[in-house]
Amino acid sequence: MERLTEVVEGALPEGAELVEARFSGGPLLTLLVDRADGPVDHEFCSRVVQNVSALLDEEGYDGLVEVSSPGIERPLTKPEHFRRFVGKEAKVRTVKPLEGRRNFTGIIERACETGFILKLPEGGAEVELSFGSVSRANLKEDIQPR
Image (tube, rainbow, N blue to C red):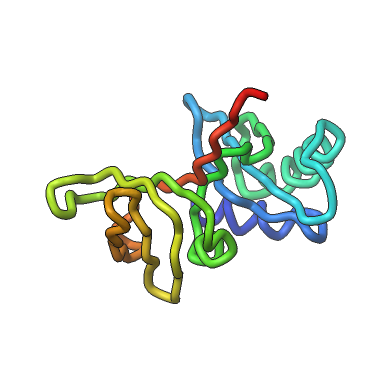
């Protein structure tokens, strides 16, 4: 997966970022891609698939490739994601329990090179987590009906 990720990142258009790469059901490689200069629409996703597919073939990967937007509950997969989204609410699941729990939801208060601080809604408590302790993290967006 590490080599496939390198290939994909090298094939992305300028201003695009690979948020996450994962296998979804057999040989389907799902790529969550974001971009700073416009929407992640059908045209953009098609262009990414075309750019990436030929290079993946050269690496010996002959499975299907799916490209999608990371969506409103965007995965946080890299330390720079946590730094970029300081002040936003996130849902975090840890590899091992911390103080008897593995699931935390709160505001990303600060982030550094090794971890981040999540301010919890329970009385303003904070929990400090290392990036290595996180199994999954996503932005949490509440869509309120108007």
